[in-house]
Length: 239
Image 1: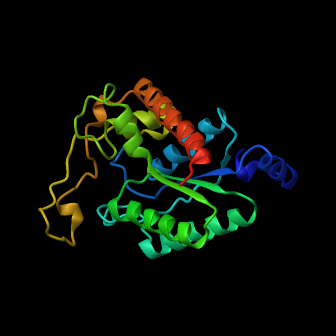
Image 2: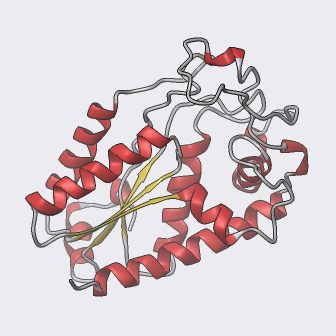
């Protein structure tokens, strides 16, 4: 049940079949010179749509903006503060809870550390504020890596490399414009730097040349299966 496509009666009818909503979070962030700035959002939203074809599930419109620190100086990246991100999630959950939703799966396609922690912090605070809800906060990238070790050839692939290029080749190959060189960031250990492009000029973490649409399809299937399992587990979770 794709919320942005539902009418009021369809939303009400959906509540008779599910009280779980999938909240996709993405980013507007550089992904090398070959992938679109919306790469994280595309992955998160498409996984939710595919999961909703297999199990009754509301899928909320994606939040396209995230906190992007290491890529903040790259062309096209739009970063919001972690405080803003937390407020977004809290307001969305409060509103949906008021509409009758009880179980909330937050899946972020953007894997930045501060971004993920902000979503987790907001989720923890919501558990205290709304005692009857259930929350899950997961990262799409972690699901893809953990489930797809036998598919991915690049050992430490992370950003705009083999995994994400394969995923976009599967979803929309027209959005993949050429390729980028294999690259890995070289940030100094523990030192905070202003000019992040100095240590990560191309914005790629991995090897895009290893990507194929077939790998993207297989990775998507694995991630969707994990989301479907999480929907079932969250609906039955007791503590």
